[in-house]
Amino acid sequence: MTIIICPFLFLQIYPDPDAEKVIMGSTVLCIHHSEGCKWTDELRKLKGHLNACKYDTIPCTNNCAAMIPRLLMEDHLAFTCPKRRTKCEFCNKEFTGEMLEGHAGTCLHEPIYCESKCGLKLQRRFMTNHRLNECTKRLLPCRYCHKEFVYDTLQVHLGKCVRFPLQCPNRCEPAKIPRDELENHLKDLCPAVVLPCPFKDSGCNFMGPRFAVDKHSEEKTKQHLLLMCGLISRQQEQIATLKSTIQNLSVNHSGSLFWKITDCAAKMAEAKVKEGFELCSEPFYTSPHGYKLMATLFLNGNGAGEGTHLSTYIKIIPGEYDALLLWPFSHSVSFTLYDQSSCSEKACTIVESFVPDPSWKNFQRPSREPEALGFGFPRFLSHESFRKRSYIKDDTLFIRVKVDPSKIIAV
Ligand SMILES: [Zn+2]
Ligand SMILES: [Zn+2]
Ligand SMILES: [Zn+2]
Ligand SMILES: [Zn+2]
Ligand SMILES: [Zn+2]
Ligand SMILES: [Zn+2]
Ligand SMILES: [Zn+2]
Image (tube, rainbow, N blue to C red; front, side, top):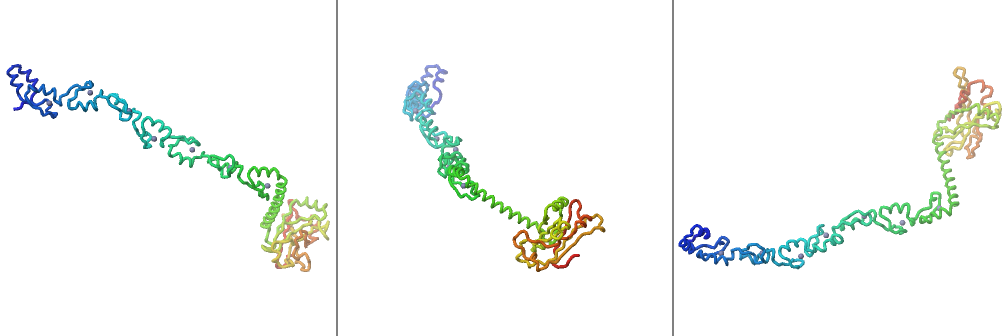
């Protein structure tokens, strides 16, 4: 029978020598049986066995103070004993086990990954230089705009950087201009850009670089002034053409002119002292594409009525459609001078009319000469009759000129 109890406890309880003999002779298992020791023998031999049992613990032979089973001593001395002698696998320096623990994580030869995640593994001693000067993920300021960029995006940035210096397309000096100033440079500053003379619109065809244009402008002042004069006279012609176009657009085409003459007293006084003083109406057309006419009035008379009568005439003046019209002019023309009396019964409005005599040259197609002769009534109304009635009111008189193709004479 095998007894598995603690033999030392047993001895204390039973100090009897006989009993001790019996007990010491009993068969026991090694106290390290559960750890794997297969030894079994009499109890008295146990102590001797324990001196050699590979499962029994002994102090570390390297004096680290740990109790280590004989079986694990070799392993302990080689790998875990803090007093063991060992070498750092990276720098190859010798350490005790406990010093190596402190050394690990600081060894300058240990390869480590770059913290900036560039993917590179380098010995710790090279890392500072790598991060500052080589790492593709290091931050660097753009040398032109001074903003910070990750190194491997810097090239892309330079392609867009607003301060990146570019060559002027005109290859002028200075050669390099920041990207955001190039447009302004080409527009206002580039000395090499070819510009037209500022008097281009006046007719100067000179073109050249900015400096040459400046020089040209200074040297050719007189020529430019002459060109300007030419331009001004051309513009005056244009203005005159435009004016006459506007006038034509506003010309009356109804065949009936209602002519208002103001400041009559002053005009009469002027007519008395100025021989041939003639008032002219706005031109008007007999119809939308008809003859162009103008009425005239001599307040102090003309021809047979000079000094005694009002004389009125009609003039045929050159019109837009003369080439299409029948000549001589043969429409009847009537003149009406309005009596402006407030009492309509007493009013005596004067109406005179005529049918043109086709043999008169006044009714032929007018030439371009401005002073064409008129036709009408030298003795339209005597000054005496004129004064008696209210033909002038508020210093204003009204004359109507009506042209009628039907040749019916108004009476
Ligand atoms: Zn044992
Ligand atoms: Zn040890
Ligand atoms: Zn090391
Ligand atoms: Zn890196
Ligand atoms: Zn930049
Ligand atoms: Zn330039
Ligand atoms: Zn010029």
